[in-house]
Image 1 (cartoon, rainbow, N blue to C red):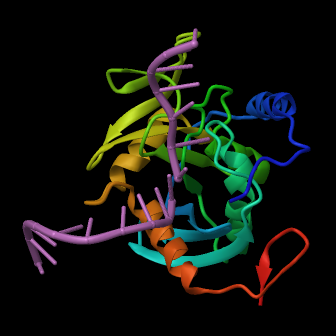
Image 2 (tube, rainbow, N blue to C red):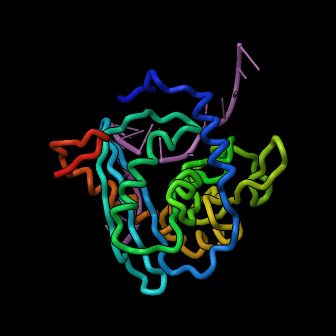
Length: 221
DNA sequence: GCGACAG
DNA sequence: ATCTTGTCGC
């Protein structure tokens, strides 16, 4: 499997995360109809990402897109963006539909440096985003809130769907709006509907067997 | 040194 | 995340 590149410097990565975290904006979502979601599935060193646009008003998927990329970085807690951000961005940029907010399978602000992959994606694409994780990466659960043990700040919320979900602000959203939206999209499965759809789409993409890749590692036909 | 650790 | 057998339910 892929390993950490020789050129990688943890101190620089942290500096990037702290700098980008300062660009995160917290504000009301406003009216939401189309909710996009992205997820990534793996098979060996290939990352199959998928993005879907779901209309809550129409109750249906408006569009879907996928991208297949070589995994260039391993999974390292707190550094998930270095592995999954590009695949997610590429699938999202191919999505032929406008959306009001994007749900990401992972943490947003509930990260030791305040830049989980949901926030990273939101800042990079300048779109509203929400982090929805099945398990906790960082923070102390107090009631239905996630608190940063080092400064007491509220960095996330625990939303009870089928199982507890760790929801946090990605970008251009408030924690209240994020938690409210996730609740309204809970299903009988573990994740909210849009993410479940993206998850299934990413797994279906595994049937594709890439033959060629561009210089950035993205497969093309 | 020990425990925690998104996907 | 992925691996992996049997088991439960529609």
